[in-house]
Amino acid sequence: MPEAETPNYPKPDSKDYSVLLKLSTYLLSYKSTLLAAALALIFTAAVTLSMGGGVRFIIDEGFVAGSVQQLNTGALLIVGIALLMAIGTYTRFYLVSWLGERVSADLRQAVFDHLLSLHPNYFETNRSGEIVSRLTTDTTLLQTVIGSSASMALRSVLTFSGGLIMLLVTNLKLSGLVLACVPLILIPIMMYGRRVRSLSRKSQDSIADVGTYAGEIIQQIKTVQSYTQEDNEKLAFSQHVEDAFLVARQRIKQRALLIAVVIALIFSACAGMFWVGGNDVISGNMTAGELGAFIFYAVIVASAVATISEVVGELQRAAGAAERMFELLAVESLIASPSEAELASQPIDSLNTNLVFDKVTFHYPSRPEHAALIDIDLNIEAGQSLALVGPSGAGKSTVFELIQRFYDPGLGEVSLGGVNIKRLSPQDLRRQIAVVAQQPALFSGDVLHNIRYGKPDATQDEVIEAAKAAHAHDFIVQLPDGYSSYLGEQGVRLSGGQRQRVAIARAILKNPKILLLDEATSALDSQSEYHVQQALETLMRGRTTIIVAHRLSTIVDADLIAVMDGGKVVALGTHAQLLGSSKLYQRLAELQFRDSTREAPITA
Ligand code: ATP
Image (cartoon, rainbow, N blue to C red; front, side, top):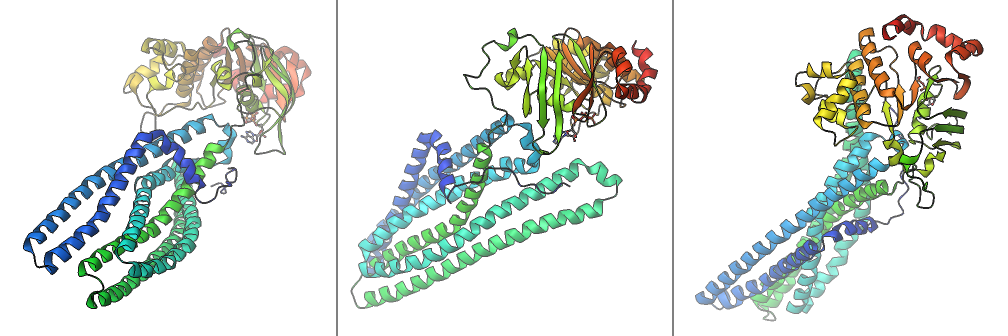
């Protein structure tokens, strides 16, 4: 389990709610819905407040006056108001929840789209579980907040303001009493709110930790079980879970305390009001209906304050979630597309595929002290093949990474057809290249989907054609569902050689000008290797090819061989030249390729 790394997000300079303002730009895409929701909100608040008039009418004109007819009218009035309230609430609830769902869906999409544009190093320094938690937990939190808490807060602000006005209109003296209580209630809300917010962020972080941990263990389940580490993992996981629980407990404690304080204050204030108002009714300064209406408004105002105090915590949690999402959206890819001025004038299709490394030195950003490539000069003519050989860690795969521009060199440049690849759009560049890795990555879709990844609009016939050329057709048709067999977690498992042939079919379909091959070392049996070799030969024909080579026959056939060691090219030449000139090559040829020499005749 790697140590938790600090994500390299830029530090937010936002105040509490400025992130919620940023959110509003997403909301503003739905102006008409927003307007309709606001109207429904105002309408419901107004109708709720008019209920106070109904209460006063039913008391004063109804039972205090002793008129059954007025009592009936009053009751009907209240039912009418209630129906309007129901209609308003339905509309408000629907529209506001719709907005919540819509905005969080949009945000999810925006975050995902942005993630796909980021440089690979970002995913090395930020744990995938944490990133996924932004997409799921944080957006879900926002959805509930926009869809319910925010609307509750808005509604409460409206009923609070309206209720307060009605209080003042109904009875000034009593209103003074209510107003004196308001700061008493607001102060603890402000104080605790801040604390709740920082705890919320901690709480979300620790939940992300739990997810990341579980994700890794599930992925590595075979290793866990074969080393019988279940008990240790349970223990380690329980620590993560308990940490998350402790943070959550602190948060809910603060919130519970906040709610308790507010309730105690509100109801004590209500008792005070009853006492003062009751005295006024007894002394004839106020009618019973007025007191009834006043108390109705006071309850409305009080419950609005209580609701605000409750949802303030939610809103602050959402601010935390939104903040983290906007931080992620603000991360800029280190692999930038060239600006209009820098963009190469020649279209990429017109460039020849002569690949050149000119004095390239490169350090991985996560290991700045260690040079992965040092002063590399390579020239691969269009249509020629270069074999990279060398001990493990020599930098062979790094050469592939730079050609695909997953990283930019620190010094020197990589060029294609005489143009620095930094001056090409990364997508255009990558469209020219296909990679066949040693352990090709397959998606959990079916075989068709996996091969079509090279050319999404390929017909089924084209896919089959490519699979045949990759010597994959025969084994694919024997799978339980042929080309429709699923390769994912629940799907069929392919052998190393079969996976490589699917990857080769994908590359054949992509029909790239440049090919990057990472030969399998020892994963393949000779039968499988024979098929892979045949497939590769088909694939390489006429393309500029760079191969991390492990087999003697591949190396012998290559136009040029670069011997790499410790990030440098230590020798360059053909097989025959290198056997004479490079000690390292001789040693590699003796040791590393000994096994493949045995198998070379098969592929000859
Ligand atoms: P192998 O034959 O074992 O695959 P290689 O010759 O392909 O080795 P590279 O993978 O290019 O070697 O690695 C070159 C150096 O860069 C090594 O020291 C390696 O530890 C380091 N390295 C590779 N990938 C990364 C990375 N993503 N972040 C940091 N360092 C890396």
